[in-house]
Image 1 (cartoon, rainbow over the protein chains, first blue to last red):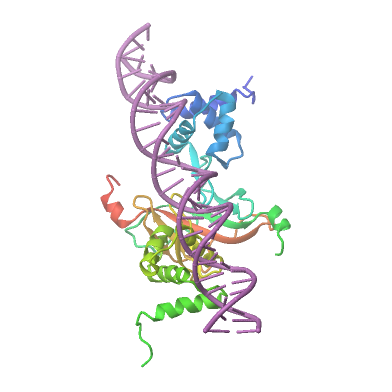
Image 2: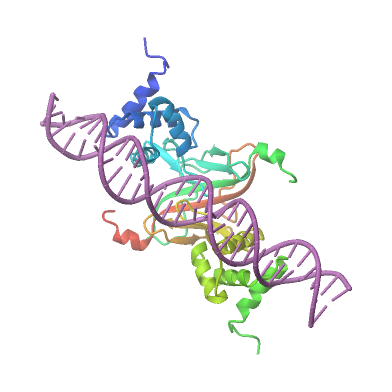
Length: 152
Length: 152
DNA sequence: ACCCTTATCTGGAGTCAGTCAAGTCTATGG
DNA sequence: CCATAGACTTGACTGACTCCAGATAAGGGT
């Protein structure tokens, strides 16, 4: 009993996520949402499109952006835009984790919050400012690139 | 006595900055560096080019990017890339301040460090990571946009 | 003061990520 | 099963930036 991880499960999960968000269920949305789920995160629109295409056969660039936007707006996926890189997408986990970005190879790694759930959210800004989110990005070198660096 | 702020001074300052960085002094570099100094900061390449052009008469797009890159590499200016916006430039003050970005109008405002000079720099990342910088970006609504917001 | 070397600038084409618009298709409620 | 709002496809387009080749000029040496 109890459905094991048969490969059917992620599909059912994706479907449930779309349904509970009140979104129409389409092949494109299913394929993209599953592609995001199955990846370790941090894939950009193009990579996700390619993966989704293996399932749906075809998927226009425009639809890719439409769907990713819709999923983001619905709170199902989190879009991380890192300067100098295309936007990356991952399943929204509501843990407000941050990211480390390697300046050399561009690799991205999750970094859990150092100080509770909302780090650095106190600022000296006047109360009139409506601060909704603090995005922390750590820049540096990943172990591989550090080892390969000329002089350090 | 003592040279007042005659308008000559910023020029001398810009010149000194270039010289001490071992950079060649060109009209384009002077004009751009002064444009960055004189602005309140947070101007993008295009706005800076326009201002510099008023001084030099002409300034190619390519030169603008070249110069900004060179100045950034030399540590004279700080380049802030905020996702969804063109890169902005300001004089490097080495105070590692952060930025607040209005989601509605895109305005940028400086935010001084909340916790000492290097906030949130402790992470749970393995020691093999070479963490060079932590960039904190606060997202939300500026007072104007908050007041103009439909419902809040 | 002038030349030489080499860094810098110009102009034009090209790239990349993403958006806009118009028309066709389809998921869902009745 | 049909109607229709919403979603998809195609193709043109934009903004921000980069690459290249050739012209120009800054600064050291004489």
